[in-house]
Length: 493
Ligand code: UD1
Ligand code: MG
Image (cartoon, rainbow, N blue to C red; front, side, top):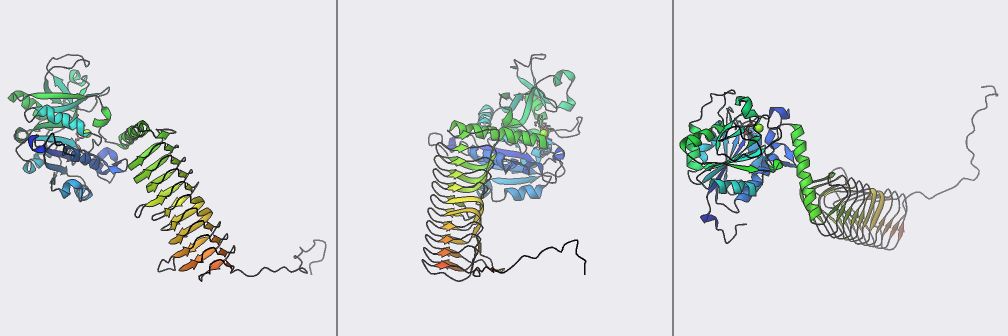
């Protein structure tokens, strides 16, 4: 939120260019690179979420996303995003893609002349708002500020060339002179471990002029944005190299291997944050949140659990090993046993206080379970409410059902809720016992306190308190004998 003590109108106005036109050849994928996901969310969406946070401290003037490869898919993906709703988002198509300088040239007509322009990359997804803010401060609308990092292996990156030649990588203090791309670098320059992260902040007006002067006379025949550094030095515009030590924030993704590495780094960071907030985890390396997880106190999570969408866990909730848990509110003291699958994607799932779910349970959209409900192995619940203390412990299906309190739903029973055209409701009133292997043909109401005999197919409403049995009466034939195999000794005829 915009803080009262730092009103936006006094802060430096900021525009952002997100470069997202590159092909991403090494991903070997049909999908545009910036739409590949970290923690279930497109890399580009991570970047734009960070940009949205910048609006808390700065007057955000414009966000220009440069698209090229897969432009339509990328633009469609961002339609309806908060920045677009605020009319801050614009797209600049770059066809063909002639380099990062050329990319920014396409954005120039969209950019205002005032304030600072921040350049971000759609394939550097984990950059954080405070890091970008520090870079904006370093630029202050007057300097060219470059975000840099020291890498053990700087191969492939643009090297930060500073004034005192031959200095060690340990004390790189001299003024920045230029960025030299790996392919254009001398052996001495290649020894430099400080590299350009691809993220910079520059005075808007100066940047717009500088990129118009770029040439492509280099080993790749591309317009390098990084050539503006030498221009700034030549013109006397101060260049600030801002060194970060957090490699994860500035890591770019070019291949499935790097994507997976960054996914893991991101998940480990999330896991650490949850543990610091008191969540107990069997193994933070086997924990994945792809959405928004909120945990109350004393939550315990076993190995290999995946959380998606909006998940709320109450006090003392325990999640067993190998669970997939999406879009659900789980109340205090509930226990989710191993291998449970919960997917409450519209409408959500609710699990009541002290409920016991699983192992091997499946809760689908609209499953709303009251306190102390028990759902056991191989039980599926969809679009059904179950009131306090009801139980379905084995091999059962409840679809489009309204279940009262203390109902016992027998092993192997199902609601036949679909007639081939329409779905119908089954109402099971309080204290009903449904015997094993029953089929409840909806629409149907089972009256309170009634019992359904095992193996019944119930297609008419049942009165309260009664026993309903629909299977044939059992008979035994005393004088019946089982057929006997013909003996080998006997003649065949
Ligand atoms: C760039 C920098 C390099 C830096 C590195 C950090 C240049 C010339 N070099 O190199 O100094 O160390 O990033 O990762 O800028 N893009 C476009 N249009 C284009 C080309 C690229 O939109 O025509 C986008 C890409 O989608 C990507 C970003 O720009 O998001 C960077 O492009 P990339 O080709 O990865 O640049 P590098 O060669 O890695
Ligand atoms: Mg790159």
